Image (cartoon, rainbow, N blue to C red):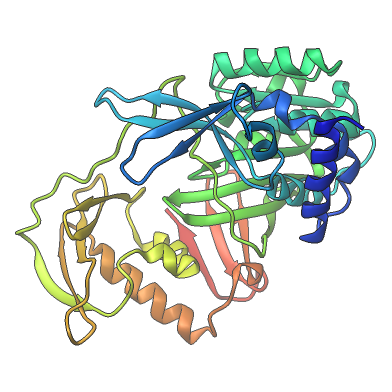
Length: 371
């Protein structure tokens, strides 16, 4: 047994101990290090350190059950940002298990990245059953070369994942390894009835989770997975994503106080439910000792990061919608409902674009319409 095979067996042991077992053979057989020739680690000051196959500890790090940043890009403002990563293997396997894959299934992956997930799929199902797209042309080319070197040949293309891949439809499964603010109906049209779509739905940063949807004749419908996970947002262009910085005057607006954590993703379900009352994607940033949120319609809120002696933080809000009030209202509703976790929430998507989140069952009468 080679060094990488021993490490891969250890990785499989680690993933299996966390409850995922069906993909052990793929984890042991597919060399992750081939797909991660380098990775980057960010430091507290914002800088990055690169580790490559020439560095001690590289291979050992690659076979740990953790995500690895594999591609950076520079924004027009000069910031280096992540544009691709190798997902934590344990999360990959949990998602693949949630897909309930069987021999003969045709799978479309949205977000090729390094190609490692496509390799796991091809190992299990056969290359001819696996299709994968990514907006990054260089990522797709590198993934194809790595896969070819291992004798694997899934069909890859550099294209926008929200469009799916109608030329190769229908698929039995679609899996997205990036987050999206809405589930594209184009995917529903490309999945056979009874098929599944697994996607990280996030209308705003951290506001959402993985949801497994079944294709019915008139809708996609299913439940959120019980454990929270997060992926990088889908990109519209093969370039560094735009840096969203709230541009508001924090000396204006109305004043109030809150006892809630100023970072609402510390309370993930209410933050997600609050999106139903907010006018589109919420941008987030820091301004000194304040957390600042804003939306494209001019709504904004700033919350002090440090509480005063009574445990309260100052809140200022302005614009058409009071963002922080919407979050506090969602928090109260969540408390009144008994603080349901993700596994009690479900989603129905219809051809008109409606995204209806429901509690316990579609007909329960308790739900939220995402905007």
